Length: 479
Image (tube, rainbow, N blue to C red; front, side):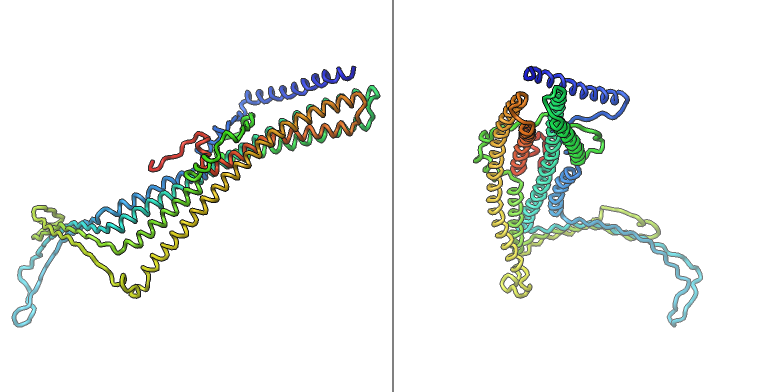
C-alpha cells in the first residue's frame, strides 16, 4: 500500500509547491499594476544588439573605425598644391613745415600743406611639388596603416560582443542551476513529508526524520545561494551591456541546444581562419605596413617635379584713391616649371649623412623580415587554436551525451533505491546517497550544456564571426 501511495503523495505536495510559486507570480503582477518598474526580458540577440548601441568599449571601437578614415584624407590633402594669398593696403600722410635752403639753414614754409597718398598690393601663388615614387609608396603606407587601425577596431568589436555573450551564458547557466535547485527543493519537501508519515506509522526512526529535515535545510541553502548567483550574473550582464536605461532584467530561460560538431567541416574552418581570423588579419596588416615603409625609404632617390605660378597686382595714388583698392586689369602672371633630378652624393658615400639613410633602409628591411616571421607564426598559432577549440567542442559534445546518460542512470537508481527503502530492504544512508548522486547528475548535466556553448563561442571568437553569428552588421570600410 505504501508503495502505491507514495507517488500520489509526491504529486500532491508538488502541486502545493507550484501553487505557492504561482502565488508569488500574482504578487509580482500586482506590483507591476501599482506602477513599479517592469522587468525587461532579453534574448541573446537583443542583449547583443543593445550592447552594440550602448557598450562603451564597443562604441570606442566604432569611433576608432571612424577615425581610421582621416589618414587617407590627409594623404589626399598632401597632393593638393600649396596656395598662398596676400593683400596689403597703406595710407601715407606727409607734412613739411620747413625746408633746408642751399646754405644749409632751415627755412619755414609759408604755406604748409599735408600731402596724402595711398597704395595697395595683392597677389596669389600656387606651388606644387611632385615626388612620384615617394608619394605613391606613402599612399600605400597610409592605406596599410588605415587598414591596420580598422583591423584593430574590428578585433575589439569581436572581443566585446564575445564578452557580452559570455556574461549572458553565465546568467543563463546560473538561472538553469537555480531551476535545478528549486526542483530538488521540491523533491526534498516531498521526501520529508514521506518521512514524517513513516515516523507517525513507526516505520522510521527519529534520526531518519532529522536526516530528512537536514537535507531540506541544506537544499534551501543551495537555492538561496543559487538565487544570489543569478542576481549577480544579471547585474554583471547589465553592466556589460552598458545601457543606463536598462533596469531590472531577466533572460531567456531556454538553454542553448548542443549539436554534433561533426556537422562542421574542420578543414573549412581552418581555411576560413587563415583568411578571416582577427589575429591573421592583424598580422597581414602589419606586414603591409612594414613593406610600404621599406618601399618609402627606398623611394627617396626618385626625381621630383616642381611647378609654381604667381599672380599679383599693385597700385599707388594720391589722396585716398588706392586705399583698399582692388583692380585686376593690370595683373602680372609669372609662371615657371622646373624638373630637378638629383642623385645625392650620400647614395655613393653614405658617410656624408652619417649612414642615416642606409640605416633607415636596413632597419625597415629587418622590420619587414620580422613581420614576415610573425605572420608565419600567427598562421601556425591560429591553425592550432582552431583545431584545439574544435577538439574542445567535440569533447564537450561527448560529455553532454555522457551526462545525459549518467542522469538517466542516476534517476533510475534513485527510483529503485527508494522502492527498496520503502520495502525496508535499503537503509536511510543508502537512500540519501542515491539522492545526492541524482542531484549532482542533474547539476552536471545542465552545466555541461553551457560548457558546450562556451566552447562554441570560443571557436566563433577565434574565427572572428561573433557579430556575424549574432546577426549584427559591422560598418563597412569607407562608410
